[in-house]
Image 1 (cartoon, rainbow, N blue to C red):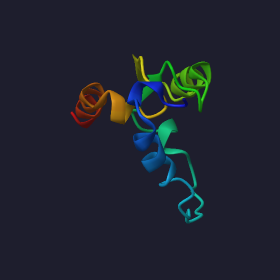
Image 2 (cartoon, rainbow, N blue to C red; image 1 turned 120 degrees about the horizontal axis):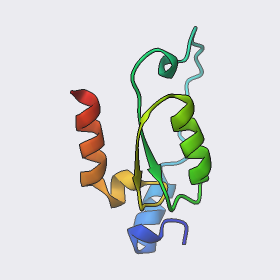
Image 3 (tube, helix red, strand yellow; image 1 turned 90 degrees about the vertical axis):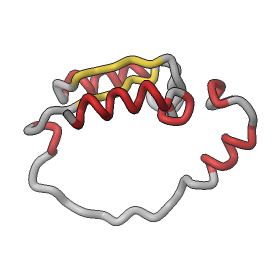
Length: 91
C-alpha cells in the first residue's frame, strides 16, 4: 500500500484519479526559494520522494523544516500539523 497512513483503497483510488492533470508550462527568471523565506514538511514515510531527498531540498532552500511521520500526502493524514506549518509561514 503506497499510502499506509490513509487506510483503505477508496482514499488511494480517489487520489490516483487526480493525477495526470494537464500542466501549463512556464518559465521563470529565478527560483523563488532562493530569495524568500521557505518552509518544508518532510514526510518521513514518503515512498514517492525519498525523505533524504526532501531534506536535501529543504536544506538547499534554507527552509524551516518540520518532519512528520506521514506518507507523501501528509496534508491528508496529518492535516492539523500541516496547518500549523502553513500558519507559521503566513505570520
